[in-house]
Amino acid sequence: MNRRFFRRALLSGLTALGIAVSFVRPAPNGILVAATTAGPPRATLRVGMWTLWHDRELELTPADAKKPTLIRSCPTCDGTALRTTATIHAEGNVISITTAGKTAHRNGIWLSGLVALTAHGDTEVLSNPVIIKARAGVLVIVVSLPVEDYVDLVVASESALDDSPESFKALAIVVRTFALHEAHGHADYDLCDSTHCQLLHWSGQGGTQGAKAREATLATAGETLWFHGQRALAYFGEECGGRTASPDEIWPRAKPALYLPSLRDEFCTRHGAREWASEIKRADLIAVLAAHGLVKPGWQNLTVARRGVSGRAVAVRIDNTEISAEDFRLAVGESLGWDKIPSTLFELSRQGDRFVFHGRGWGHGVGLCQKGSAEMAAEGHTQREILAQYFPGAEAADEATGRAWQNFGGDGFVLESLDVRDAEFLPALNRARAEAFLRSGLNAAHPFTVRAFPSTPAFRNATLEPGWVAAFDYGSWIGTQPLHTLASRQLLVGTLRHEFIHALVERETGWKAQLWLREGLVEVWSEDVASMAHASRPTLTLAATYAALTHAGNETESEAAHRAAAWYVSQLLAHYGRAQVLDWLRSGVPDDIVASLGQR
Image 1 (cartoon, one colour):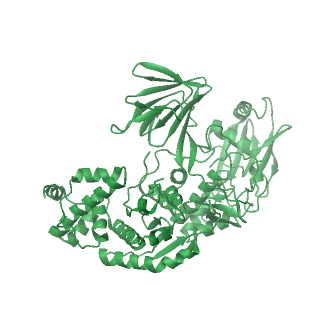
Image 2 (image 1 turned 120 degrees about the vertical axis):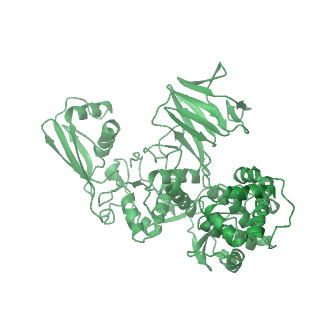
Image 3 (image 1 turned 90 degrees about the vertical axis):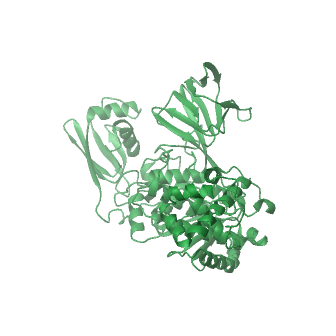
């Protein structure tokens, strides 16, 4: 599952610097504040895949003919290449794997390389490491995802298309916090891909929504919620109905937290409250509650036993038995559909053999209200203000250190850093921004954001780029390796100039523009010489250049591809002029021009 957009980042010899490539929530055991000391951040998460399907069989198919998928029977065993489709079947706590007419039994298998998984009529292609085991005749599929890739996928899955960038960013911080700051009750993996944890669509979201999610993930990379110097817990729901809930209203074992109070939310109901109503037969409720082990059959009466400060039902009484209202709601939702009782903010009455429910809200109501957050963002509030509304007293800070990111204003950009000493590099960044404008002739109406990461691992974990990449840009966001490292080798201005040019070019790019054209323009304008028109013709064809730009295996291949792209673009500039090439940047180079360029 390679979901990253391909962006050129300056290959500035970092190896020489010594830089190695190196809306339902579970009932928590209690709302507890984490330890004050900040430990090392996690780089990956183990995510359970297709956890609601309880698949007993699936197929594995190699998805890259050039790079074989490897199967191992233990994490450190030698791998065997998967060359044809294999069928995996759960047999108790053991799996059988059948390929080419031969069957073997294993306690589990470990997969690496691009592979397609097919089950229950669905197929997903993954590039991340996968472990497949069996538990009681059901397959357990675990995918190791980089934390930021996980956040990206969840934000895309849990957000709405019309949400604004600031609400996307607030959600990204909450999603990351939820994933990292508590255990989620799974034995084989850290989180599942269902709403029991956080909804995750493995194919992601394309188009505008996917782009917004990626931008929000990068803009908040590594940030989680902290309260008075300690890691905090975070939750979110679709709609609170005008008032959020405190954790103990929803989860009986939860302890109150100062940053998770029940609060009036005028933003959620700014354009009116969303109300819902449903009728459920007593016979259906009897079956549901018995099936979930909550109440034995034969009961007659159902009433609200207790309410919380938000007005939500905390407990319901069924004859003489009292159970959690949230457990009641979840049981009904799992068996009869989530639209039957979307929240515990309800009134109920009995009409003959039916119970009538009428309420507001959708989801548990604890923490961030997505509807209210979207409204706040639409009204011009920042992600910081959104988080302050729903988690009063808590603030976003770096997961590794607990320090807040500092902002420093530059000419046409904002520098973000955890180290106030990075402000000394503003003159160099101002120079890089000015040179990018002069060389490209392009400008930007809105400022860029430059986030300087404190270390190479932090940069890699956030951007998912290899260690030999000095910087990375996406839209108006630029992430860099530590500024002091680049500056010590006189690489800072060149690196940032390149990224500013790249960001400016991308703002002018139309969807038909070829990748080699975009990357080649950046290379030409980033060079210290004005043109490469008289350089030697590259050995890479345009097709090979495109392939290497998208799938470079190392720094050498990537560098060769970018130099080739620069040569081809220099030919266009020399023969057709800058104005025409910029027009093609918006519309794409015509096929006949591409063909002639390949012969030139």
